[in-house]
Length: 439
Image (cartoon, helix red, strand yellow):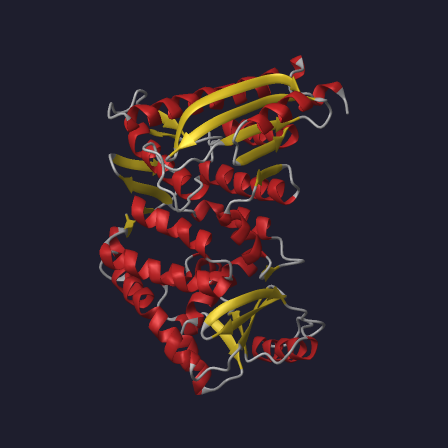
């Protein structure tokens, strides 16, 4: 590997300065943790969310939320009573340079109750030396990252300095991190439950020719701003959206718990729907802004989401079990399989040559349905967006339009299918999946 790839080379000064900034801010966050735990409040008024260039937020609420998150997902719980400072969750952060026998950076942190009590840093030590030091200490988790990932992340930061688009950066960051985890350029060993479950759920959602990242980059401008209402204040994350979602710290932690506690799509969906219904009912989740829809849309949305779990249970008794739904858009499709009213898998459909682009849409959808039934098992229903001058408007904001049946074509045509589409849980699936396929 060429010398310029090595972390300590002069050519990487910008990369090192960028990384050092986040290292310093992380040390300040750890000092705030200890200061809050001792009852003295924050030492530094602002905190920085790691590797988010627009992530400067009030320190008190962020530090408390971070401490709770670390304690919930990294601490080693046992039947024994924890120490006065909480359950231990010691960890090491390691930068790996594949082109060198040295570890450019290793930081060991001793964590109790989610608070980083102390740390020790090695720079430029041999791999053997670092491994020996790690073996001599009680380290529960090793977080490793290869330099190439840091370089790509630094590149994203430089692009953000040019376009200044927070939502675009966040989407690119999420996909870059997911790819790095898949390619083992970023690892946590042993894998924490939330990541292990995400991998299992991902296996239940399979896309081949559909570029999910391209879809996300098409719709990133419609991401809402976020406000996390925490103890000690709010954490605002401005993404340039036209509206804002406010969520309490408790609801956010419960949302993350859903991924920690559930390893299949059906159970996770049921959990999140119930959580959303409860959050909207109790005010733990709120829509901020768009006052012109506050009395109509918000009321309707709360009512629909709150009643959705019960509707799923009732309709599951009369639907085929499992129920297989084909969702088609732009010549591509996915098959959603529902069992007991909940999605258990989302797989890309082989539509064969069912469409030649010369037929009317009703006949075209019927042919696509027949083709999918031939290439897969029987499909109970197929749906697609109608062609309309405002179809792109609908695919961006489908939940606002109450006339759902006016947005889609479906097959087969019967009153039972109309009832499912108008009243049933399929509204949620169609509203979520159709916009992504039509991007």
